Each structure stands twice: as structure tokens, then as C-alpha cells.
Image 1 (tube, rainbow, N blue to C red):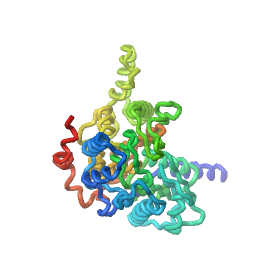
Image 2 (cartoon, one colour):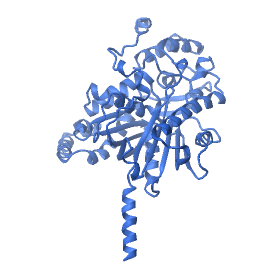
Image 3 (cartoon, rainbow, N blue to C red):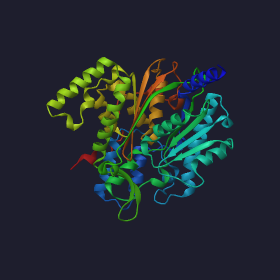
Image 4 (tube, rainbow, N blue to C red):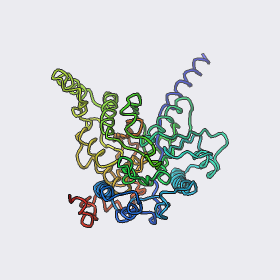
Length: 439
């Protein structure tokens, strides 16, 4: 009898600890001295003597039409005129500044000590020094000597959801734990100083940023949590050669390193997106919507039109989701996802405003968009939030959170949220650089 009771208690405890709660998060806002407006971008572009007039014109056109505003942030070596010769010191400065601000803030907001953390996951794709960046955080905050750390690199813009999945899986075998995820990207050593167009796009889109998230599977913290993880789906197209090569770190003919974004990127993103949603849809949509989707899919198959991957257009995800957090990778990415899911301007506003205010901050962009929703007081208890991210590999990851309580923290948006959305997203330097459209 005693054994049966003990077994029952163990089963109940295991079920109670299957949940993954987001206790809180904190996004990084760099110092104003590192703001990189369009005019400053023009000056940086002019410093690259390898660029001809056509390349200069091409870059300005990308910047002016990118959807990025005048208050995004760049690394300090760019402001020092040393983007072509980055140092390890500058790269570490960028990471340390982000880590110290975000980790300190999320711990304070949650009332948690650094010594309470059981698990630490750090994801920075394109910078992996030794000792690891995760170890630098352990040292800075004097964490326990039995802490388990994971340092992920090369995961691209979809890395933060990879980290969440890692923690979710660890939680299944370890009870009542606290986990810290720190997500960022290193811009300093990855600024491209060559003239290859497919490698210059990163300079126009990627900006400094990051986020720290505190998660737990302790049921005693459920009331404190902001969100509860419901579903997470990961899709990886690495076996597909086109998808594998559509976004990769490389060197041009002159030895300048950078991130190459090929013309196959939109195709890979669309394929990964459709496959991911096909797995996610049955988990989040009501039966009647799934039935409609299946019938429409069969009809399209009979018409031989389903091979183009457009089935996602038939799904009304709003039947099972209230809010959509889309990776702010660029205006084309946001508009493409919006079109596929039949989202309106209100749905896309958080991603567009994130891109406008902070630029593409890689894997952390999701959390800036979530912060926008919270600052606008959109998130109510019981609402379901879908996060969608894309990353090199090629990966498409998604997850669904359930809002645990009404949220209204201003976060990094606190001082400017009343200005958003602006009346227009047209770049203010369009008049000055209007000549880029002259033939």
C-alpha cells in the first residue's frame, strides 16, 4: 500500500512539473550614443572604398526601404570607424553590455537571486569565444558551481526558441527548477566590409539587441508567471541543399567575411513555414477549422494546385490564436507571413514597430515584439500567443504561449510606446536620398 501511495505521489509531481512557465523577460536598449540613423549609415557606407556608385546606391536603397527607423543601435567599433578591423575587445564589450543589463533587470523584476538559477542557456550565433559567453555570465553574476550551462552557436535568428525547447526538455526530468535564457547576436565582428551585394544586406538589417528570459517548471511560481508554454514545433530543412545554402557565413573573393543571404532564402522560408504550420495547426485549431482545412486541401489536391505550398492560406489561425509574434527579419518577412496567415495591420503592428524601432536584432526580435504587445496592454489572461521565427540552416520554429495574467509592463518601450504606431513609416531621409531611384 505504501509503495502504491509513493508511486502515485511521484506521478502527480511529475505531471505538475511538466509545465514550462515564463516568469519574466527583459530586452536590451543600448546607450543613445550608439544610435545608427540613416544619415550615419550613409557615412559608414561611404567609408567602404571598395564600393562603386552602383553598390552605394544599392545599399542606400535597401536602408531607406528596409522598414528600419532612425533609432536603431549599432556596435561601437562602427562609430569609431573600425568596422573593417574589429577587435576581440570590442566584440566582448558588445556582449557584456547586453548580458549585464538584461540579466540584472530580469532577476530584479522576478525577485530572484543569481544563485537561485539552476540552468543557463546562452545563444549567440556568430561569436563563440573561449571561455564561453555562458561562462562569462556565470562569472559576472557569481552563480553556483553546480549550475548547468549550455552555450549555443550557429542557430541563427531562430535560436531563442531552440533554447526554450532545450529548457522545456530538461524540465521534464528535473523538478522545481529555474532556468535563465540569454539571447543576442554579435554585430561587431560580423560587419561586412566588402562589395558583394548578397553579403551587404546584413549591414542594412541587423542591429544590436538582446533579451534575458527567466523560466521555471515549479508549480509554486505559476501565479507569478507571465506566460505558460503550450506547444513548440521545430522544422529543420538542413537536408535540402538549397535551404542549407540560402543563409550562411562565408568569405568573398577578397577574404572579407560576412553573412550571405541568397535568392533561395524566400523559397526556403516559405517551405519551412508551411511544413511547420502543418504540424502546429492540429494542436491549436478548433475541430471545425481543421475540418474545413482538410476539405480545402483535398479539393486543391484534386485540382493539382497544392504542390506550390500554399495550403497555409486556407487556415484561419485566428480561430485558435489571439496574437502573432513574428520575427522582425525585414519588411518582406513580416508581410509574407502576414499574407500567408491572412493577418491584418493590427496583427502585424508589433513586428513592424519592432523592426522600425530596434531593427533586426536576430533571435531576440520576438521578445521586443512581445514587449510591444505588453506595453500596449493587449495581452489579457487566457489569450494565446503564437511566436514564429526563421533561422539559417534552414529552420522555422514556432511556439504557442498562454497568457497567465493581465500584462502591462512597458519594458524597453516604456518611454516611446505612445509614439507608436507613427503616422508613417516612410524613411525621413527619402527626400534627401530620393535620387537613388533615378535611372
